[in-house]
Amino acid sequence: MKRGFIVVLATLATVAAGFYLVVRPCVAPFTNYGSTARVQAEIGNIELALTKMLGDVGKGSLRDFFDPVANEQATTAYMAAHNTNLFEASSALYTRATYALINHGRGALTLEASWGDSLLKPAQQTLDPAVVSKLGTSYMAPLEDDHWGNPYQIFPGPWPPTMGPVLFRSYRANCEFTPTGIPEGTTPPDQLTVHVPGADPGEQGFPALAMEDVYIWSFGENEVSDQPRYDPSHTYAPPARNHYRNNAADEYLGGGDDLNNWDGDVTFMEHYN
Image (cartoon, rainbow, N blue to C red; front, side, top):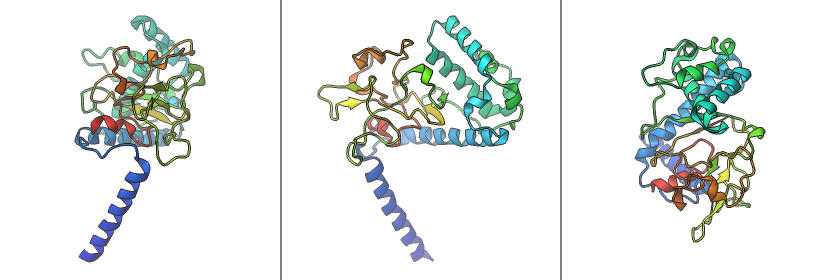
């Protein structure tokens, strides 16, 4: 029995080593994995919770929990009240609403906001009561903030073509094991991919696939989003770096240390080595 168990462990270790070489060839061996382990696990748990929720209501997309007309009205009102753009407003409301749905199920419709929670009421206004009322009462125990004290950001897929290029970015390309040098789960470089002179490799920020079911990300250790800033004109005039936060160091352009669920090669881990 013990010998067989050892053989199994050895086989698993070999498979794991092969997986490391094939899937993450451009990321150095992790030396600071502990600070990200919980975050990556919870991103996976969010995906599982959403799958269970959709199964319970017989729907296929996180978007099905939102009433299109009410969502548009609430988002427009939020944009005006906070002087922000469509992406920032949508992300804020989707995130808060999804937290309520995961933690309280159908109770999200009647949940009372705690002191300082100004997002709950407008987020509740985006929901479709006919769908949400079919949920159970909880899908995680509970979903809390990430390792650095910030909410996980949640945006339903697929990416709306009316919002221009996909804003969600994989930091690096899979530079060794794909013929095109494009990361798994991403598309070729575009106008938001940044060329950093002197860097190796020099390109950062490859768009995620537009057809992801849901986009989930953490601001990471630097506690700010390193995704591109939304351009309402959708032109994203060059240079690409102008469309990221203006105080970002070169190494954070193109996704930086934002842990996420769309980068199949987890290239954001370069920031945790």
